[in-house]
Image (cartoon, helix red, strand yellow):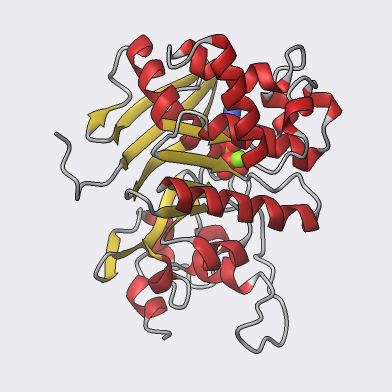
Length: 331
Ligand SMILES: Nc1ncnc2c1ncn2[C@@H]1O[C@H](COP(=O)(O)OP(=O)(O)O)[C@@H](O)[C@H]1O
Ligand SMILES: [Mg+2]
């Protein structure tokens, strides 16, 4: 039996490369984080920092080639994910992990009705016969807020608005009552008004079904509101992690600090917004030492020369920076 106190999901020193021709894109370079049962871990970081590739690795959706997992481990419910035979993993993962992507149109099949698609996992996993599966699909459409679900179950994805398609994808993701939901920028492609509704739906479902969630998002407001834990990614590494209530008010990595200073906040008086200078690193030619050093106000020759240690600034709060303690102490 898995230990009830053990994390539901453990990503440990994960390394993933994309190889094409002579170029090697080091998309994930030793990323570690955990997700506990029923809790939300927010994964933050600029575009290109390895968030989606990490999520795809957990689901084992990366095609190889070009992707190669060159190191690390993923454990789900105590079991090794990457080493499990694919057929066995598909069966488990399909039931126990649901995934919601940014782009519902790309992940829904255009040639099948939404009712058929939501019913599919029940049939594929041998849970229900076809008729009962369709009834469950209709009930799920209703639950995620699709009006007239009986009629709408017979419509195709293109007949729904962006927000409604996102609801359909959420219905598919939760159909088999997963214990973990991975939501990869679930609201980024939507209008601002719809974003809040979809986020609320996800949170309601999470509470109602006691799901854990990996929430990949750019929205620090949402993170502050819903995350139990945060993992901040930069250059394919988790550079800071800990409880959201510890990390957000008192970050210890200059990158996290810069991210927090770059968004408007209502909780503190802010003279001006400070966008992070420079651009994210090219993952094919990562900087030496700390990947953030070219953009970091504090960087010294040490940061250029060597990868910084993981510093424990408080219990359960870690940051990968030579100066983590100083940043944490506000010096
Ligand atoms: N199929 C692919 N082939 C080559 N490089 C890829 C592929 N998918 C992602 N990458 C690269 O991996 C890095 C991390 O990407 P990704 O995880 O999508 O970032 P994000 O944090 O924005 O989700 C990026 O440099 C991206 O260009
Ligand atoms: Mg992404």
